[in-house]
Length: 165
Image (tube, rainbow, N blue to C red):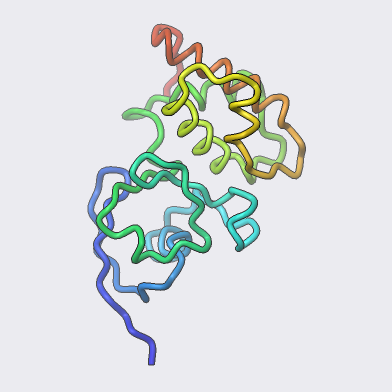
């Protein structure tokens, strides 16, 4: 017998009540139940990082995370990055360095980069290599590294944050 419970989730600052199995992966709740399709499915085993969101500010892979583990926590998806129609420093740097090729992994990469810069505002190459373990089939890792460094600078000087959605 499948047990359906009402789960209370706070996503991008809004409260949602969803009736789902507590063991359903958070990724599928976001995509299939709430129609927040920015977070992507990649591998299904939490290896590639396409499904990365922030949970209580920590970059977290969601394709194997039971939704029950996220209840009562602050969840931020790619749709919640940036301020009221403005790109974040990371998003602007991604555009500036033309990071994506196919773009499929980019929402997870951006979420991982945002989390890294929240923790380490001026990361070294080693910090970036250790924190950004997302897989990009197009191999744009050098552009990712440069974009993260640019985003770190943009965060230090908010006057460089230009660009509306």
